[in-house]
Image 1: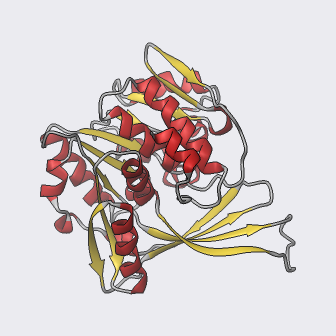
Image 2 (image 1 turned 90 degrees about the vertical axis):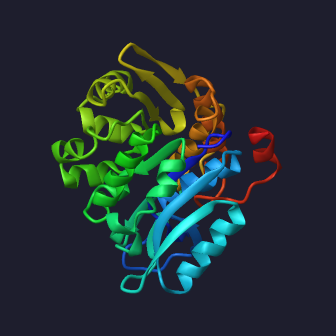
Length: 310
């Protein structure tokens, strides 16, 4: 695996069509706002943020044989992410419509792009096996394909001695899939780090109290480290023996898009290189706080972020 721990992220690259309104959306009418095209995709976002935080990271995904696919490669090159992008001639590069209202809250509509059609036979298993840590998001598990490829990657990674993290991705999609079905395709993967947000933790356990949900998830995922993202309230780090609350330092919400992905990338960048989980979460909370103060899932780093990253 080399002298320096590396992260491999398998998942989606998609272009975000970000739509921000300056006022409440007028149903059936016209509203002024902002419409921009930004690089995104939960998996790609995690890979980019881990790289920005100093961790060598590889990304495995699938894009269309189209202009957006070419731009995806250019984007990851610019970010310094080593990418292994497969091409589809039958499907377009993924895209997501992201609606951000005047309060900063976001809603998303995801299309089924090429990222949903990654097959096990296409998986670069040598890339997976060389990594110290594999990260998956549930967007690779909600449907099949790409579920079989993601599960195959997990098997390869664990056989090679790597650790595995999973972000359950979307409480709405878990609900549509069914909690029991979701658990049946994720609890046998050997997850070492589970990264839900508060809503995902609640839908998976039926427990609205994050501390109770944290303990329940640690039992469900056989002793995995549980890190619950609490949005404006920071994060909760724990397991079956208790949890530690990591409070936020500020709460200046402009756009919540990508906050969870930036948290995951920042957290893994520290955890994989030996940081204590609570210290890694403190760092990740600070990075995510900076992200939500700027529009888009991957705002360009400024001096304030550089001071956080160091």
